[in-house]
Amino acid sequence: MRLKERSISFVANFLLGVAWASMLIGAITSFSTNMHNGILSALLFAILAMIPGAAAVLLLEHFFTLKANHEELQKQTRLLETLLEQNKE
Image 1 (tube, rainbow, N blue to C red):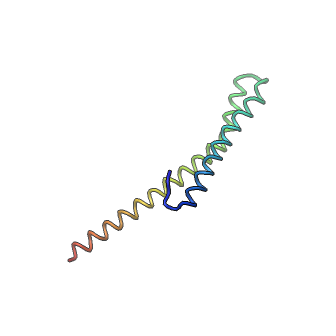
Image 2: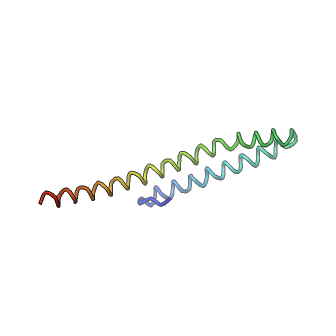
Image 3: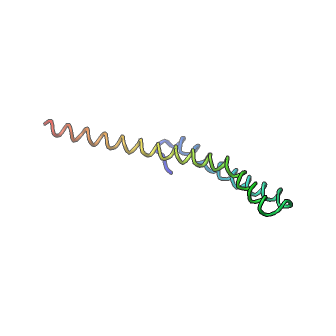
């Protein structure tokens, strides 16, 4: 997602990449360390290890969505204000 503020966009996209990487590393590490207990328990622990990373991804995506909605509402407000100005004249 691209934001107008370049620094916020860079930091948010970097954190999104970190969240995806932590989710992947957590799943692989947990799966490989619990493989000796059985495939089902290894899958269960891998899914549990993915939860913090998935939560971070969801929060960052929610931030992107809120920011995009805010920018769109600002555009619509400017358009409505110009229409209101034109109707008054």
